[in-house]
Length: 338
Ligand code: PMV
Image 1 (cartoon, protein in one colour):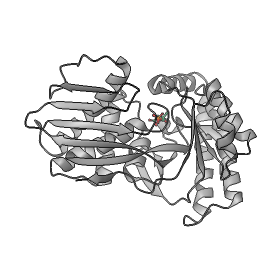
Image 2 (cartoon, protein in one colour):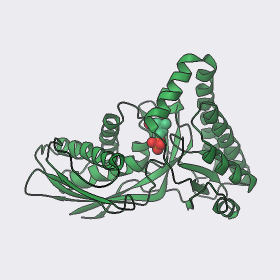
Image 3 (cartoon, protein in one colour):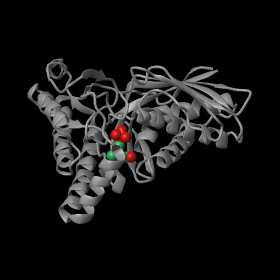
Image 4 (cartoon, protein in one colour):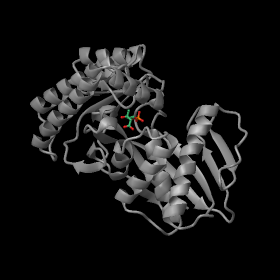
C-alpha cells in the first residue's frame, strides 16, 4: 500500500483572470487530502471515501469506468469523487504503462469540497502519486502536475488552468501564467480562511465571466486589471524576505491588493452575499485585506491577519460555518507511507 498526501491552496490573487492568460498567485496551505492506494489482482477500482461527506461512500466498479455504482448518497458528490479518481487512475496507468492495473483507493481529506481550496486538485495529485508509486513508477512533481492538469481538464470540460494542480504538486507559493508555472519565494503569510459551508459551480462561474468578457469591453478590461494587480502583488512579494515574517507595510499592500481583487471579482459576478459578508467581517475586524478564493459563488474567503481578531469576528459571523488559520504548506505532494 502507498499513501500520499497533497495540500489544498488559497489564491492570494488572480483566479478567473488566469483562465485568460493573466498571471495568478496561488499558495498551498496546510490542509491536505490523503489517498491510500493498493494494487489489486484484477483490473477493478474500489473507491472508499469515508469522510468526504457526513455519510461517506464506498463504490466498486469495472476497470474501464463503464459501470456506474448504485449508492445512496448525493449523486453530485459521488460523481465528482469518482470522476476525479477515474481520470487520476487513467493517468497513473498510462504513466506506468499498466493499462489493466486495478486499485483499492481510500480518500480522506480535511479540505472542504468545491469551496475554492483546491480539493479536487489535491485528490487528483495525491491519487496519481500514490498509484504510480504502487506500480513502481514514481513521477517527479512537475510531471505529476502536468498529468493532474490533464485529468482536471478532462473532468472540467476544459475549464481548468494549471494553477491548482501545479501549486498542489510543488507546494509553497507559485506563479502561473498560461502554461508557464513557477515556484516563487514568499514569506509565510498569516492566512485566515472563512468557509460558508457551501460550494460554487466552477464551470458555470467560469462560463459567466467568459460571457461578460465577450459582451463588454469593460469586463475584459476588468480581467486585465486583475492581471495588473497580480503583477504588482508579485513585486511586493519579491521584495519581502522569504525566511522572515512579512513586515507590516508588505502585509498592508498585499491586503489592499486583495481587497481590490475581491472588488473586481465581485464586479465579474462571482461573489455572493455570504462571501461578501465574510469579507466585510474580516475587514471590519482589522484584517489587512480579504477576498474570495477560487471560483466563488460560495465556499471560502481568505483574509490576511496576524492577530486573532479576524478569526474571532468570523466565528461570530452568521454566514461563516467554519474558520481556521492556514499556514503556507512548504511541501507539495508527499509520500506518507510506502
Ligand atoms: O474553486 P477552485 O479551487 O476550483 O478554483 C477555480 C479557479 C478558476 O480560476 C476560476 C478556474 C481555474 O481553473 O483556474
